Length: 563
Image (tube, rainbow, N blue to C red; front, side, top):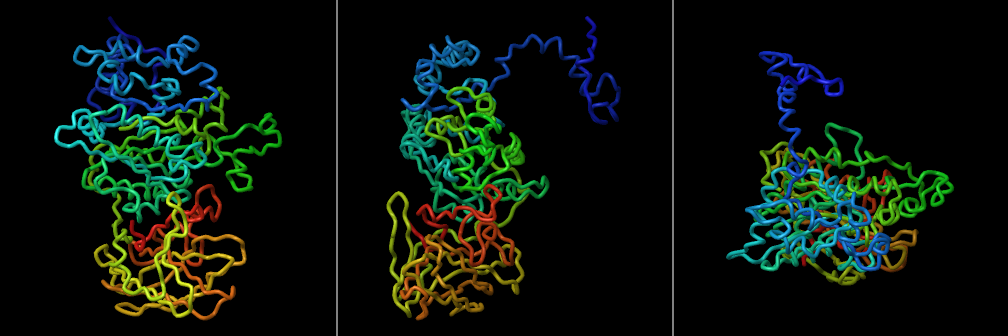
């Protein structure tokens, strides 16, 4: 039976789709071949096109969701009220068989008691890229039948969203805690340890240099969530956000256990909004966005106002799975669906929004495409290996266990702290005569603080730098002080507290030190701070400076810190 193309089946394209250079145009070009397959493929049911192995997480805490009170927790009741949303996954998957067994039985431990909150269509939308999932499949197989190995580790690195900021009970209702609980229930034969390695308020370059502070080397699964903190770069080619993300994912993929890696993308600042004149935004200044923008009005961004679309190339190239909270729930929020309002999900999600995160899926890295030597910024080492001398400086944690503020503290003039650093960058192709940027993390505050001199005392040379840690603004935050040093395998940098003081006191606190990954300026650390600047974001939502990471009381990236 002949098949005639209708007007709606015409394809608009350039030479490739037109059929240039094919042997017989109209027969061997791809569109003609595709057209010839239409009679048979039209008989296929949509369910055969679904990836059965994808199990999406969408957690829900009791008593915290409009959706919960609207329909209750029973998925059968939800499906009866809104059949188009297909919430009854167990019933849906009972028609799909693996080895003559329904998937609902095969994955009973994972699906049987789980109550999804997102409609099935939204979960599929949010699972933006799955790829071959080689590493994830290997991990799931080992989790189901652990044999000799029964210890597994999962982790997340990112910002305040995954850290659990603003959730009702951090460690319980943040999305990573919900996911961890589900993992333990789904794989009862495996012993799973979870580690939340997030630091609020810092972008990807921070974790490039400080991965060892947040992730165990033998980790098996790592989530990466930096879309909000990395902001956007309008450049398509040479995009800095993409380049930084690639460097971090390569570091993680290269860890000893060859972990599975999953990108988790969340909406960016300015994306959630109600139109001007809306009852929740009568003056055209959306209150939810305004509060999180620290009192500054933002230009509200559309659906594509994010870096995640540029990062999909990394997911495809490295076969790293990619989940998008934006894609999963944006349409529901824009339509003001109960339980999925802007204020319930964005920017830093509520306890309910923290549980509209889903799933998991990866594979080994492809051959190097963009490779900068990325492990040379100082990884954490034992304190004794870096501190050559601590005379008058003491190791003190001025914070709490949840939000530590560790560092070396001195309170009298003449106190000295010497740090032994490796500033040799010949291995990464830097010329021997190029200087290396060393950044000293130190506290500045409006009370008690004094001044210190930074100098090179052995193995290398550098201009002396005097740092005044007293500021008039009534805040306490970590700043960076730049020391430009020559290259040496063993470069000793000294911090000496001076007599001069604007506050009348002489406290000086060193919380970290970072050596640039290569010689010269313009390195990753330059993009998250700078000389005489607070250590924080120079990106985020477009501001020149955003909340410094240590303002929240968390440790800065540092070679001095050791846990």
